[in-house]
Image 1 (cartoon, helix red, strand yellow):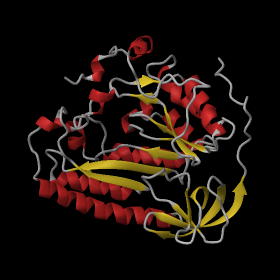
Image 2: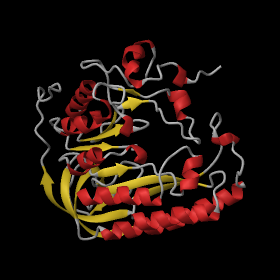
Image 3: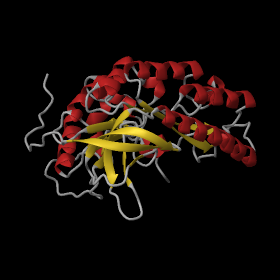
Length: 358
């Protein structure tokens, strides 16, 4: 019988570090000097912050097989970042099931991420730190400010809104509303007007009405997000929502996905057009060849899930270079850019990482 991993660790977060030694948590207990190799040699690498999640969203089975939240110690995260820098990495993508909860089980609590981000941005050789998987209900003003304004941290907000109707969000066991989420977007842009904001939404959730869907569409239209993933609801074994009434027919869910996806494609293209004439810093991830242009990503574009920057042919740029560029056009959500100044890598020295003081 599969075991619900939420039962393997104490309910109280601060009691988990002492108990985790007896429970295997993938991606933890990384040790400097441990023999290892990267799976790819690109300039971008994921860096694990934590495992598990303490939230109980009605549609999500992740907590049952990932278990309760367990954060990696900050010094361990910084040490792995320093190792990745020696392997040619210039951008770190911080990953977890819920990055906003990072540190709630560590001394200092949920301010741990606020303190960690400047340390990671200061690792020699690392030029961009990107945070993924942020929970809107847990975003605090200090965290918004640190992500939006810290040099070396991408002003990029991967916010899992999921919906904008308060009624649907309550059934999802989540919090918020169109007004709450628009206020958060405004708060972010007050610090960084060109910040990237992306999200995922679920349509066709049990009980979703036409009015609920219209509320979501209104939010998406007003929010001007850079990227949105649209998913149709389907039952996940072991979740609360699997037992809900009010399920919509599969063809209706598909129709709603198509309707919202069409809107999102138009809005994302408009948001890309808003960036024409602005300057971006592009990390090159694919060099030019006979068939393809040179491509990379700006600070507001995450790997694989967002748009990319297409650099003018003849730039001579190599993979791993960071270059200032001007946006001159768009192709859907992608930006067409003209490269300018090449930016040197931050100074890389083997002894450049220190333990947190104080």
